[in-house]
Picture 1: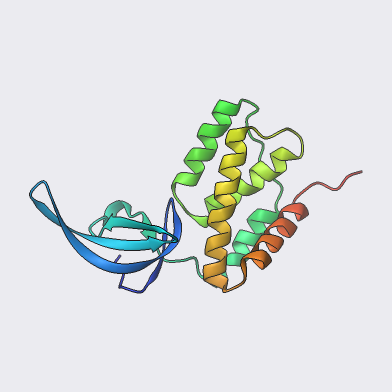
Picture 2 (picture 1 turned 60 degrees about the vertical axis):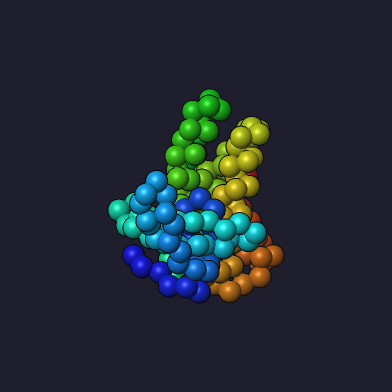
Length: 164
């Protein structure tokens, strides 16, 4: 996948950014091209020839958000009561950087939090996942942050079981 300068991209860990230049660097006698990606105050250098396992992707198209909304409003999957097992599972789920995985992590932690207390690690993962989702949501749908956050919380509440 080739990106151009000025193109909006999503890094699988750091979220949305913009290609600000394509740079060559010589490391250990090997010259490699890198995308310089500006993400907020951070500039990342991602190898251009990272095609087999790229950490960069195109932003999720607006048409795909219907599927993401369905994930967020669905009932959460049960998570392990063991905090270490839960942390490993959630961290692994976040690694691919797809919005589907991020939405499942948010949904499952939100659902879990209504029956048990979240650990510090759970809260950290949940906050990171929500920032990642909201920042891409803002980029893909051109909505204000506050609107994306409100919609996220509305969708999550829809997935909670109705009290009897």
